Length: 190
Image 1 (cartoon, rainbow, N blue to C red):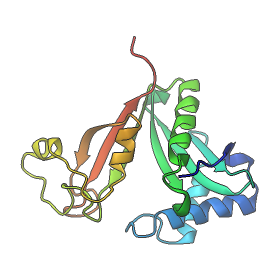
Image 2: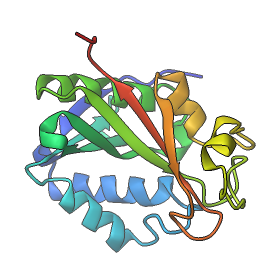
Image 3: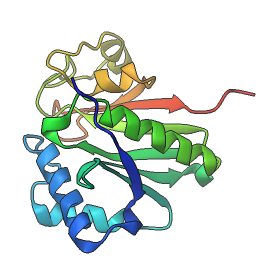
């Protein structure tokens, strides 16, 4: 696994062509994830929305100035908590440290803005975990406590970089298609 040399740029600093490349990256990274960005137009809309004042939007560029990753966050709870949304890495460059580097950079930006915690939802719409395709009621928390990663669900990546599972939203994407909620404190406790 060769590491990629990265530069990080705020989305607002990119030109129109580079923003289209970010949208294409988002679309490509989520092919096969139903109900994500199922069209390039939807991905372009997400890029445009990432420029809002209550957001952080950072793009990773390689040494040839090509878009290789994107991470965003949305402020909540008066800026104390931020939702990581989205994280996308060019599919053929995954598992080379780009996602981890993007999350590290995002954590720095959130801390600078007074944030304490980052959270995210990571859907299981294709039965990649033991929670997918299952009726989680009753005893939702019991089932969550025994979660298994069956086929490389992204929650494993997030756990490796310090996020913890903090809950689940059963049926968030339809029956048996939950959203797994994760969070990470990014500052030392008082």
